[in-house]
Length: 157
Image (cartoon, rainbow, N blue to C red; front, top):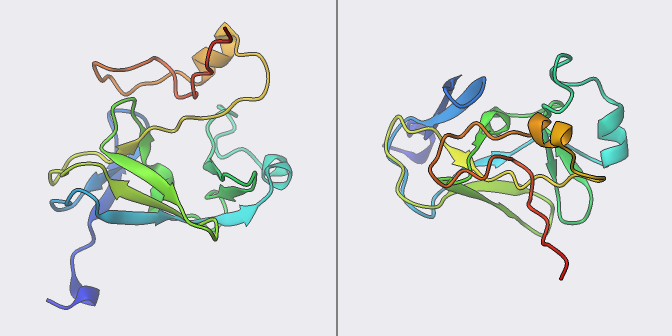
């Protein structure tokens, strides 16, 4: 079977974690790139001026923050990767190349039908209050769940 005729490695459907999710359509080998996270490469300031992806939940976005401060806004020209849910014990990880492209890769062998997840490790400017933690609550249900999608800040000594 040629590379172009190969069955896509993933499918988007409803998720028990949250809303839509991305699931393995076939077995995926450890280390394999599953999908690139695509969308409009822009600044946080521009992305924050755009309408919310979910008007009932302004904390739900399709924005991926890059190491140089820019963002990929998958709400504009995004692909299926925007539906990959968070998990505190993920089966995928993200990697960023020098051009600001982000790829989702398998951390381990993933069985067909298994939901793809990665740890969002979201950054939040400002004080993390109970209300903020609730807005970014994790729903992964894993034994190692830390209860939030936020990147835990190191305690100052």
